[in-house]
Image (cartoon, rainbow over all chains, first blue to last red; front, side, top):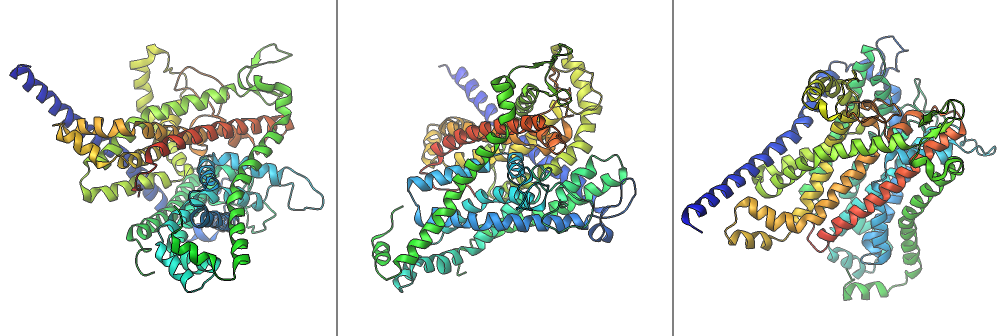
Length: 296
Length: 331
């Protein structure tokens, strides 16, 4: 190759290198941009409508201004409570199995794989399943079946929590050093006791944040609630009745024709996102500080 | 990972064998419940979709229904009881592929920047921000898309597209709302981007440093190092990441429901209204009056379930093929 051709080639390579670097930086900016835009709008439009009424009153009738989403906030809390009754024990239990008993076994790999696949199943499918299990069947001696209810919504959300809780519990337990387990066993502590009071307890900050993450994920779920919990304009904490939920309320407000209700939708979205960002930041804080490696 | 010798010895002594076994079985039952749940979902969906299945069979997924009275081909007509999933399958495919078209190049760019170019002090905050993008609920994306994105598209982007690319037939000016396939493709792209980019980062960090150093030692520029040393080694995992993003896009409900227009029709124009499999279930399930209508919706749900299971399983295998054995540096 002649010197001139070689120099040209070197130049082309350098230019390509710079172009790619610029493109990568541009892509990153383009990705951060929607985040910034969404947050700006949420804060500007949402904060303007936040007031004491928003947290203490039930929704105003169609077409009237004012009112709040107190019932939806309480409803969401009830639904999340129900969901964690299902999701947290099953998730933590299967996480303990994966990390403590099943390491390297075929069964554990299959469970892990299924959990990851279940994680990718659309939430709307969970909603249809909960509908088929609870809302659809009519059994005369089981009064909680056969109609829309908080129970059905909680079931749909609970199933969605299991894979997330399971996988994060496993990850956290794997970070606990072997020496800790062996020390407990060496003192004559039975294995189940050492697992629960030593290993799980050591990893508990991580496990709790894992649960928070699952919480944050299902807290914003709307689709599976649309035909299970259904939503409610009034106060209700009865598990047997349709119940309001914050994401559902945001949806109903956002498609309504009234300007005042759009305002409320933005405010609801702001409340939801603040709760979620808090949870995610906490997870980040706990996992990055390595609480587990310290003397927790 | 096998237990150490010491641990095995410690476990073998003592007199708590029964409680230990009980505990192990209990935890195993929790783990097995995950299989049970998948089986339960499958059973319930198949059971409740029976009605449509016996009536239409596989035709439900590929042909229109001929109305016996008017003789016209109908896709989705709850009033007369004609059901076919074709427009929803079409809508799902179009919006998902549009979203991948937008998201994949951007996600690759972000992943390359964060793993190979980013100065150390920026890496942590930037990856946190992309993670945050994944944590925003679908409903908030939908709200934002409905009130900010769609008006923007309606006012500026769609007219420009019609002017410049109208001759392709893909952009027609007959929908004044701004809703449609394109709007849902854009919002889906924003939603699947963090998934694709974080998984791509995971597989890229799994590539050993020696590969990078070897290519650099041959006198490569940084881009050549990334192309030859990193992307080529991670390509299977990157494909897996893209497919996982596709799985998410296929099942996304709320944001799409709010911007796609919800009409059970098929249009060539990307600016036209449509509906996806997930959005039609969300839109009509609670108000479905006839058993047949509900069972048709459940069958669409079943199809969605089967497709996402296959897509996710396939993608998971691809990602594992790359990251297996590598130290986990994802977080």
